[in-house]
Image 1 (cartoon, rainbow, N blue to C red):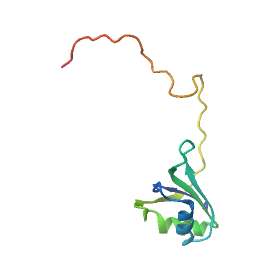
Image 2 (image 1 turned 180 degrees about the vertical axis):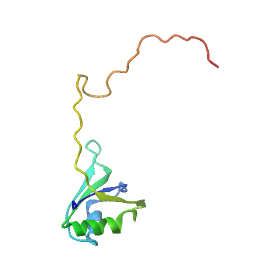
Image 3 (image 1 turned 45 degrees about the horizontal axis):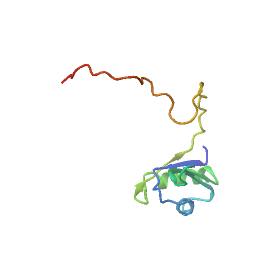
Image 4 (image 1 turned 135 degrees about the vertical axis):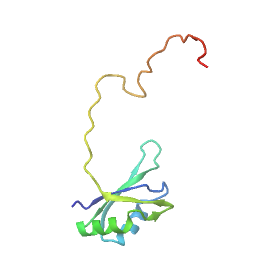
Length: 112
């Protein structure tokens, strides 16, 4: 088993210290990474916690999955490797992309 855990459904007020303290009750915590939004600097509501051993990770899953923290029921499970996303081909970087259509809209009468 992997000792890196995914922790989801976090309150946006949860800190890395909160997670450290909560998970330490189930074993030695090696690392806590709370995912933050790049634009706003606020929590994205999930984190990764690395425990010192598989046994500690399993104890944390058993003890914390579904438990309430900060008013929300936690999701705690083994982290899966990040999946490669296919590169998009084509231009138009930035926001949105084409909207399609355009042009003039003609009213063809009411359907109702």
